[in-house]
Length: 294
Image 1: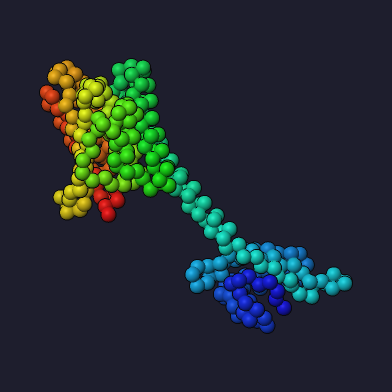
Image 2: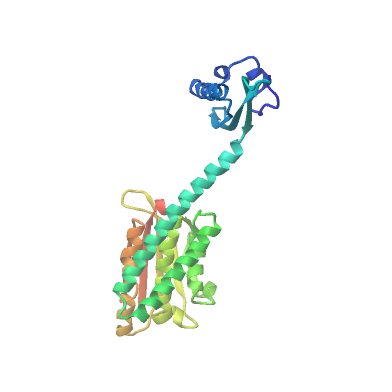
């Protein structure tokens, strides 16, 4: 006799049949063993089973209790099965999200460790280190906010540019000219390109166009093909800087390790930083794996 069967089964599926008639052999044997134990000991048993179905497996929590006579002898087994498929799917989704969160957290910590090492190596005092390191951490946090708000999809390139420059210029929309195409960057690319933009913006506020009320920088992004013919994104930052050789030398040194080594290496791309008497030009080439091509 069967009552209130889960939707996955009908009365015809189970009435007058054994477990082996409607369950895979290994699963049926598992249930038979549990039911035999209930009859032999009189103690209840419970287990979770996964039943293959069209469209995906369904999960059931199964309880087995002894059906005893007046003398306490087990005459049979009363089996109760509850469909817990949705619960299991939620659990699996949560586990996948936690694994992804752990992976991304480790990546973020590795980035922070790299930033701390490079900042310390090129800082002459603890005060300088703290100021630069704090700014870079805030840059990561700003980029991470964009990534999180997109449900971990990444960040729109133009929005990332405006976000990073906007941290130092209240008039970023007028001081930054964005040309070309914008693409969605994956989370890793968003964090590293955000760091490069931070270095460029800080440098510009000290020596370049953003320190002048009428100054502006041009950021252009264009789809290209690399040497292997694969899609890539060429991102260029161009601005005028002060006519001062001493300050130009400082500009070349400030953040150049992050711009020329850390960021392109982390993205498996390439970069060049060129500074003349009155112009700063930074070009970063990002492989197609770091952004949404279509």
